[in-house]
Image (cartoon, rainbow, N blue to C red; front, side):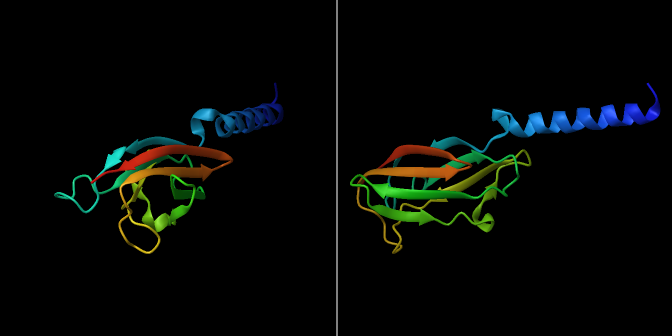
Length: 134
């Protein structure tokens, strides 16, 4: 194989390799962990005042996503600001954290009850529940 054909074959290999990497499921935006599932905001010493959302973003924080909190009746309580300035990198590996302080859009603590979170990004929707207790 001459040098020209070798360069073309190498170029095609790298294009196919990186395309496969970008399309692989393990490199998609993913919600890793939500904790704690039961919180007690404004009570106690502050250890349990926040709900943390840990996620993996292969684009290192460049992915646009939307995080909303709803009450059990489906009313939107809060749209969490997901601008890059509010993301907290956990490590350099593409893992990030954002939190909800158990406050509504008016910055008042929500009442005890069951709340639903919805994280949407890259045509994926992650949902779950959080219990706010006294």
